[in-house]
Image (tube, rainbow, N blue to C red; front, side):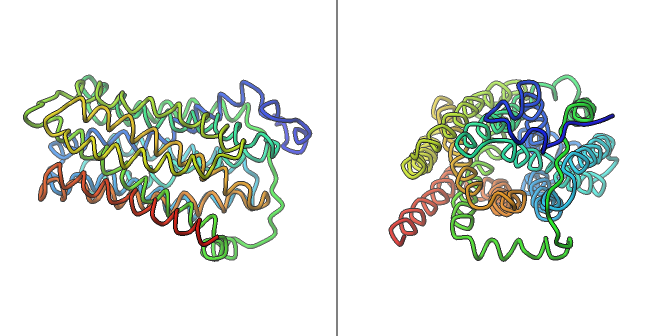
Length: 400
C-alpha cells in the first residue's frame, strides 16, 4: 500500500496539511495512548485490594507507569528525528497493545508492575504523533494545530479517570486495560491506512542522538525552564488526582467507583484550555498566560484545603487544576516548538521527560503523605509545587 508522504504535503498550510480525518485520528490516538497512564489513578485502592498492596504503596502503580513514560520519552521518542515516523509510531502502538493485554492478565505483582512499566514506555507513541502534527503545520498556525491535537491527548487524560472508574463497576480493573488494548489496536489499524510517511533528515547514530538530550536541556534555556515549570505543575496534578479518589472512597464521602467517576468528570473541563491556550500563544500572550495558569493551580489547592469536608470545594479544585495544568502545557509546547524545527522530537522528549518525572514524584508522594499527614498535607504540598514554579518563572523572566 502506497502511503502519502510528508514531502508531498509540505506545501499545504494550517490544518489543511493534516486534513480533517487525519487530524481526528491524531487527536483520538494521542488521547487513547495518554489515557493508559491515568486509568489506574482512581483504581489504585481497588488494584491494591486485589493484589495485596498496602495503602501506603498503592500509588506506586501510577508512579511506575509515569516512570515508564519518562523512559520511553528518552529512549523511543527521539527516534522520530532518526527513522521513518509512520513505522516507528505503528510498531510502538503494537507493543502497547501487547503490554496492555499482559497487564489485564497479570497473575501477580511482579507481572503487574512489569507490564505497567512497559505500558508507560510504549504509550509515548502519543508524543511521536504530536511533533509529526507540528511538522505538518506552518509556523504561523503551529500553536493552533498543536492545540487541536493536544485537545485529543488532554481529553484522553481527563476522560481516563471517569471512564475507568465507571467501567470498573462492570468489568473490574483488569477489564479496563483489556478494553484499552482493543481501542489502541483499532486505532493502529486506522493509522496503518491513514498515517503519512515522514523521513527525517537525521544523520546521527542512535547513541549520539540520545546523548544529545542532556546537552539540549543544558544549552536551551527556554526548554529547561519550561520543563521545570511544568514538572512542578504536573507533580501537583498527579498528587491531587491520585489522592482525591482515595479520600472519596473513605468517610465522610464513602463513594462507590461510579461515584468517583462522576467526581472525576469535573476535570474534563480542562480539555477546553488547550485550544484557547494555543491561540493565545499564537497572539503573543504566552507570558501572561503562563502566570495565569500557574496562579490558577495555586488557587485550586487553596480551595482544596476545604475538600475534606466540602465536596463543592473538591470539585472546584479539580476543575481549576486541570484548566491551569493543561493551559501551561500548551504554552510550553508552543515555546519549545519554536526553537529548532529539525529536532522537534528531541525537544519534545526532553520537555515531556522533565515534567513526567515531576508527575512521578507527585503520584509517589500522594499515598504516604495522605497516610501520614492527611488531606491537608496533600494540599500544602500541592500549593508549594506551583508556587515554586511561579517564583522561578518570575525570577528567570526578570533575569532576561
